[in-house]
Image (tube, rainbow, N blue to C red; front, side, top):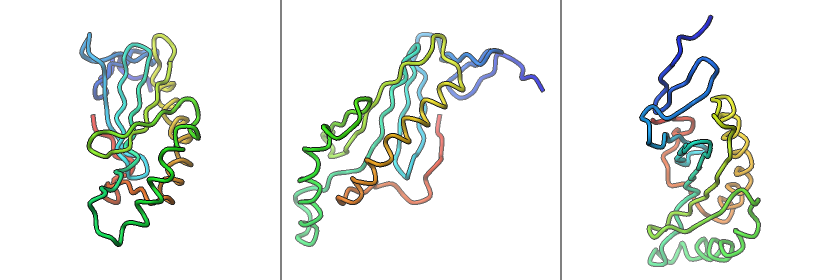
Length: 153
């Protein structure tokens, strides 16, 4: 059954060929979702997609003594993390102690909705092992359980 085009989907307009564009011209389309109980923000500007994943929150050095071992594992691992990441990801520590994983994806011009979804999926699959390692080092997502798969526009 054909879809009436153009179709409005959150911040996007989708034409009959599946090409996507921001619904509001001149603005970047953005949406958020969760992956493995971690919030992610996606921004589309032209044919470039930016992903920002909150890997977790680095514990404060002012926490209880029982958490010192966990902090030492995290602080020992974090300086090595950028060299271990694949080239499409970079990591920064935000002023509020959130560990952010950032990535940019070049899409076709004009972008197609299926290409956008496939690119996001592949990029998240490449991030998953690093989230595993960060969890083993003691970094927790800080999100509430059951938040996975939620999309907010």
